[in-house]
Length: 438
Length: 162
Image (tube, rainbow over all chains, first blue to last red; front, side, top):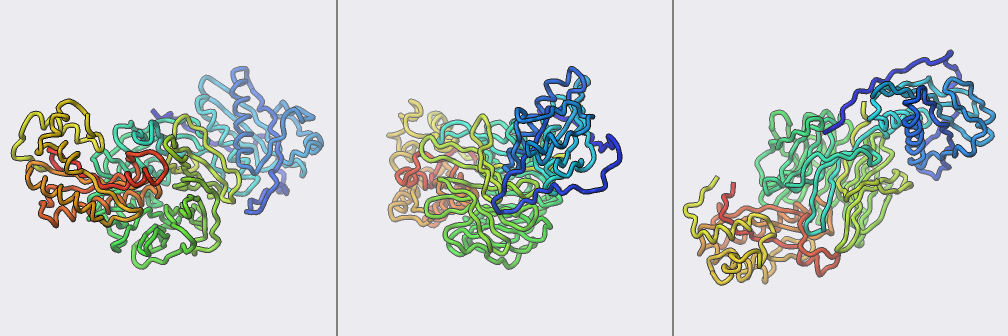
């Protein structure tokens, strides 16, 4: 079952007046080559004996979150001149400047039963100032990873000026068994692969789960009836029901509208596949495309006004944009090869896609007018991008070649840097990145 | 929901029970199934002697002459064995994205359905669906395997087509 815990986020003025000066420490994330920003995280202070282990664990995870972005580089504790072992102590800025730590993160942890309180402060070493005020997060000891992610998100946000993505979850398909008898189950995990839990059993083939904008529900395609049908699953209760769609033989490729009340999806009838919009509560649906070609993989713009989708109306798969109410569509992809599975970025500026060309698969991005196409990856089979909540990172599935081929999840920075696998015990595919958790 | 008028032999029930699971009905499934190979009214005869599948070229749903010949055999069998229904399952090889391959598999199964209907099989006895690239029967990543995976399989069933 899903672990539930409440988090109270309390902003505390933990000490003294806020320094009026806004520190010059700012990492502007650009597409150019960047030098990772060096930072130091002295071990968070355990404020009581019970907190010792979890304080150490949280410290390590905060550092891992930040360095894992490729934007930050941790300075090892062995290089520290002063220990900063107490959260309350004055920061010895010269000692941190001497080891070129541009940012220093200090924290303290208290454990009371299963209650966990984490405090943190962020220091701009070269300005000799604190960045923002102290923050305190309260949660459970079991949920310590979320506390660490929240600290890392706050540090990331303050240094980059952009939203973080560490305290978020991803729903995906967990895979096991050989290629000709593959078992697939819906599963959910933290952004870093931790806390994986299954949401369905493997009794029916399931594909392509999609998180709701608030992360409370998941749309997915199930073959339980023998044909693809769209189901909606409540993440908390793990209850699931089949979504009512327009009459058709197969319904698949669903995504929520930005307000979570509607679904855009593909419906197939008589060999033809078109895109529909449906109301989740009433089941009423409207057909948005009517070409005899395959129209599928719709994704809404962040403002909900437009839909990007793929169609083979030109003869091969290409990407098109139309009004969210249907009507004329304009083609945006014109490069070599096929373009599929478009996903609108949360910032609205880019479309991520799967490109198939000359026997290779790529994950790429382009602007919404089709310009500035950039391929981020290349392999035998890369497919199905999903955006981090801040639009900086893309996760996707990579499948290896041959009889023993398996799928796994990878993430890559939108700049193309920092490609890395998500550590999971089983095969995995079809990730959908949920929102930052409250 | 359609209830079939007569359920013939117990042996057939055993055999067809194995047919409800796609692609799990190959030869040698059990002794009863083996006995059906020589019985022209058995689904096993359909699968093995008539031919339960047709293959497609890359990214197409056009029936080949060879495929049409197999489907002509399926028409004859379905007309002689009117108690049976068929689910036509379309499949794609792994060279393509998931959603597109579901649609492509459906184009293939629908091409088979339309052909069977055009030759006189009642549409009410046929249902088309697609598994996209999710159910390969050959697992290598070469054309030799892909060719077998780009298929539409006519799965004979006594079960109702709800």
